[in-house]
Length: 155
Image (tube, rainbow, N blue to C red):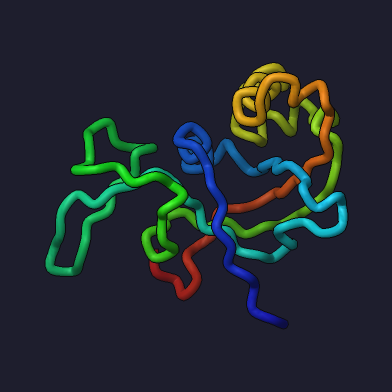
């Protein structure tokens, strides 16, 4: 069996908290490939990019903090897009991939997306993708995942 790919994925603070709380087990991403190929496959490992910072150093190296679970300020928060793999604390294993229209999301799926209802998911989708994104009913890739350990077993 080949080694799973390790790919970055961006999540906002509220979605990071939903993953940490065990409430988020799915994510939907716009299909920009025209249905030919999903970005991830079952078995792939995703390392979560989130807003982070360095909060000093210890004898073992830098001390990292993550905005999703800290009210205090880091000396300087760094945008999630700039997170390096070695700083990532959350790893996910993709367990299912499917393609569907965004409006096909069920109430159960919306809850698995880390929100309370389908209506809340619709508001979230529009806030990310712009006004009218829901009505366009675009194709999306649906990735179901489970939280896993960092490859090599280090946490």
